[in-house]
Image (cartoon, helix red, strand yellow):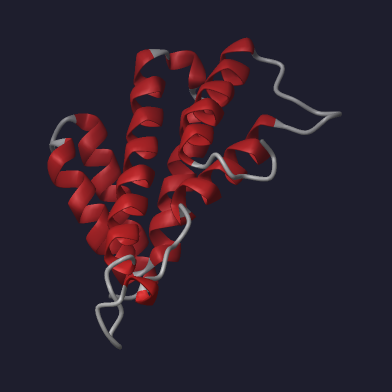
Length: 150
């Protein structure tokens, strides 16, 4: 699969899950499979969904549901990829042969949402957008406690 196909497939999985066509317990493993094919494409689909969630924050529960899905997806992908890389290495079963990886997807989404919420001199004027951005930041901050911005 090329990266364009992975991006389109990840977008489709997210949209189907949000519309109720695809259960969340099926969507998350599909996103993980696509992430293993092209991490950058899945991350692009998740950040695109974060843009939509923040821009349409005034829709209330629909926006909150979309935000919840991207946070769950990021956490699931990070947890599953960390489990694979923390298993003993090829050279032996020694505990020091393990490799630990940070929460790559959650960290990237956190940085993207920080960018979306604004800077010191510029922030969203709409209260719903600010609130949705803060909600996403709070949820992602708990997943990435070692982030420099926290």
